[in-house]
Length: 498
Ligand SMILES: [Zn+2]
Ligand SMILES: [Zn+2]
Image 1 (spheres, protein in one colour):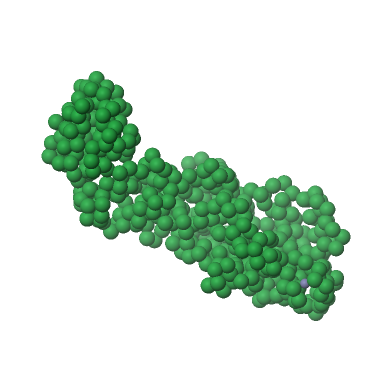
Image 2 (image 1 turned 135 degrees about the vertical axis):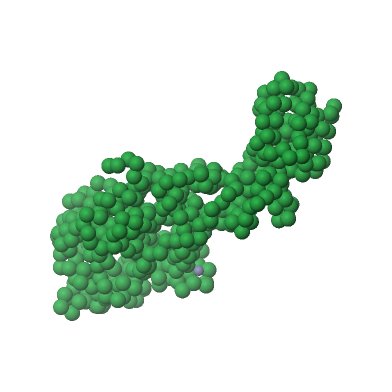
């Protein structure tokens, strides 16, 4: 493998030889908030999709919402009365907020909207519609006819025993509306119907079309053929020995006579200090949340810069570093991260975060930027960054990054050493009208040497005098951003104080 190539280009190289049209499939069960852990799947697919396009291949990205899956339990974020809906398909359950078409749409819609912002444009399918359209009927009949063969594959490969009454098809009960409580009693492959009984006491015969779905492992293998899937990313849980990709591979070959898609196995995204993200445990950050605090291209970059097989540590309190890294980045990961609306930013995000905390309103923000050397900036281009920084400060910024310029002299100035005071006076005397941020930075080091104290003691003295705390933003830019008369006055007063 060419180590210098981006992983998405390597995948494109590996599959391009077939010369066929590529269908890259992704999907999710919309049972709860769709978070940035889930985004890894569709982002990985989009990376491969773009790389294939760049390589001149014919490729389509598809997204399947598993809207026909049942509600498994009353998740902690649901009201108790959802107990009556457990076992029903997600598209047939009322939405939690009361404003959406159904439960599945409640979680699917914000996700699809954020995909638009991220410039990901899949063809979207909803599983219950595919079943209702009859797309799964031939595959279902075949599965029912080959029930024993499929059961043998599942038992041999996954090393688990299936109950005697196991069927590859789960019937939707006409009476109680649950898809998890029925048992197939027989089928008629000419009339394409199934006979079933249900826990609720009901028994009946219904057409296969629209009245049930294949069990997960069979459903997955059959949709490869139905939708023509040639490439599919999936989480490492499906890639284990005897896992659903292994069983899917055999079912696909032996029952449906088709090669399985090229697999892209991806690792989890860990939320700093909380572990792998999961909708059911509530350890999540939603994509919508993240797009409040970073531009879409940076969220793309977070995922695309890492090989799928490596896990990603994500720490929302360190988004500033991520954005600054993106701004400095060159190369393929950044290129693949671009969106139509990506804007070049000429100002480090770190500095926007600092300037916002110095400024009291948008006029003074402009003035702060001008003082620190960003006067010629097209403010339109920093607008989104300002919105991101404002939200980040309010929601995720660690205390160590937050500060407030003290209007009156902080009490802790009394604790400054004689050396620190001398240093502050030295800095004040070196400040000229046209001094730049980097000159100020050098001036601080010069002053610490002249005063016989360490650089870090010198920086501490500056922060104590202006912020009333021992740490703060990068001193050169920070001091340059302040009102000059205020800065000189404060340094001199703090230097002279006893
Ligand atoms: Zn809703
Ligand atoms: Zn029933």
